[in-house]
Amino acid sequence: MLLDKLDSQCLGYLEKASQFCVQQQHPEVTPEHYLLQLLSNRNNQLNLLLESAGIDPVDWIKLLLSQVENFKDVKSSKPVFAKDLLHWFNRTAGETNGQPPEKSVQVSHLLLCLWRNPELYRGRGLHDFDQLSLSEVNTFFNEKIDTDINTTNTSNAAPDDDATVLM
Image (tube, rainbow, N blue to C red; front, top):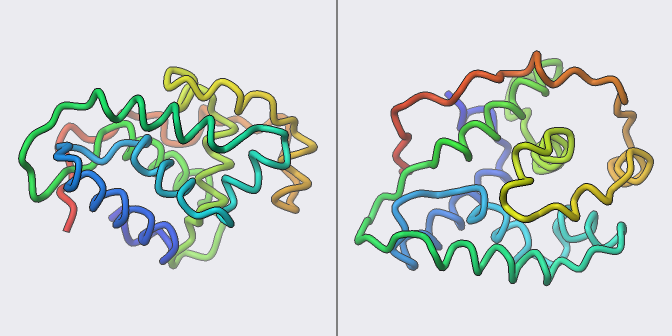
């Protein structure tokens, strides 16, 4: 199962995103909810990465908050994972298949997957993520990223139709 592949930090942000959904009465945990939780920690990798590229994380927070304000309010004590969130996580898990099997997906992997696959964020108005160069990302994560990476081989299948209920 997908949750088994997430490390404790990823799971913690997912739990916070779920709690935020319950508070806001949103039926689904979306990438916007997850990114907001990442940005809520000033020392998180996403904040640090954006700041290193001259992108103000507060701008992303404002944008994401304006987007989630438009989500449907329903009384739901158990929001479900949105299909696009599952797609992002599944795609990331596919890209980390060479990692140690247990708890191999980390926040840095999620961010690298997001950066490598603009279709995962471009429709959300996070276009300034495009400003990050390969060298900035390489330097930030201190790892070599192949410029010819073929992301079409990594779990391009649509997420399952059945939504996953958060525990």
